[in-house]
Length: 380
Ligand SMILES: *[C@@H]1O[C@H](CO)[C@@H](O)[C@H](O)[C@H]1NC(C)=O
Ligand SMILES: *[C@@H]1O[C@H](CO)[C@@H](O)[C@H](O)[C@H]1NC(C)=O
Image 1 (cartoon, protein in one colour):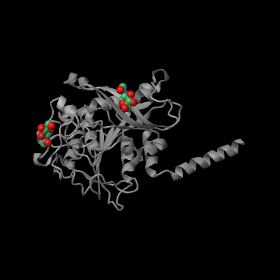
Image 2 (tube, rainbow, N blue to C red; image 1 turned 90 degrees about the vertical axis):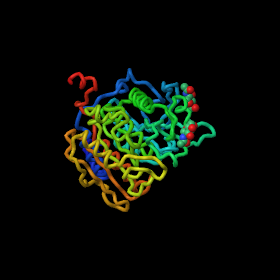
Image 3 (cartoon, rainbow, N blue to C red; image 1 turned 120 degrees about the vertical axis):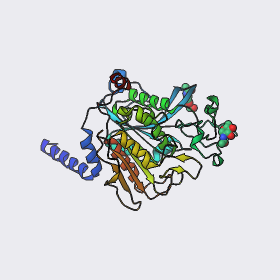
Image 4 (tube, rainbow, N blue to C red; image 1 turned 120 degrees about the horizontal axis):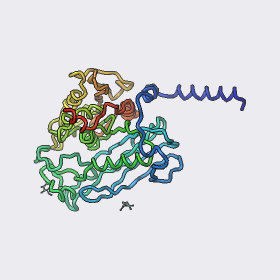
């Protein structure tokens, strides 16, 4: 092909791509160039480990991991890798399914994999365990969000779950049984390390989202692994009573690192399983109110004390999406929530929740201001 024709064709293709791209992609592409990436081990060929046959093609499937928890446990995650990942670092999205679900089903109901192909990031879906004792009340796969054995998190006359085996073994049964007691912090950290050794991941752009019980786990992870995630987006997931600032009040104890994590919460106005106003839910669990959780994060980030209406590409529509934000955060990050018409587990039509989540998360990156906790206490 003559050079001029080739250039013309390339120009036409470029303008076609641009014309068909949603505005939020363009906004993201501009933001992605800001800041400095931190390459993972997997960015250098000699350090790269292989979890599957790496032919440069897209890959989608399960990976198994032996985790040294209080006892060794065989765990797994489902991963969606876009093709042609090279040696330039890409973001990593962690998606956490709800109680009773499977990671691959959750992955298939969301658009994260296809956005990953278009925008260049890897999606990973850890699998929760179900180790309910045979014959006991079984609530299916779920996540340990650090509350097992705490009798203050439920109204006992409505809760009927049996104690899961891993909680029995660690003496953490009580009046509020409901999931296993394997340590999700160890598991998710191992997932991040494993993927970061196998692929070229930007360590400043690790994100976490999740729905329902997975949203509760997302809260727990950003509280208990401060400085790991650049942003979090829990969907209809709230911390249980007393856990808004972390099981050990990490938001106060490790404010410098918590200030690195931006937060977007999505929640249906008619949710009565985890009511956005908090309090006792229809199932007997007691939750923190969503606005109070966000106020805590807004305080950590030094934002305005009150949330104000903010506009997004997705406002209105049948689901009446409306977003509020604590503006002016001195951390340079955003603390935001969006409400919409819907009950628990319901999301707005047309993939709006998936889009707004990716748009929000990918804006953020961990900064150089992130200091290890030791360095901070050394100064004091
Ligand atoms: C973990 O479980 C999977 C599926 O059952 C199995 O294929 C794999 O060999 C197990 N890994 C270990 C180390 O036991
Ligand atoms: C929690 O599990 C323990 C051990 O199985 C059981 O004794 C207790 O009754 C359970 N609590 C509830 C509220 O079901």
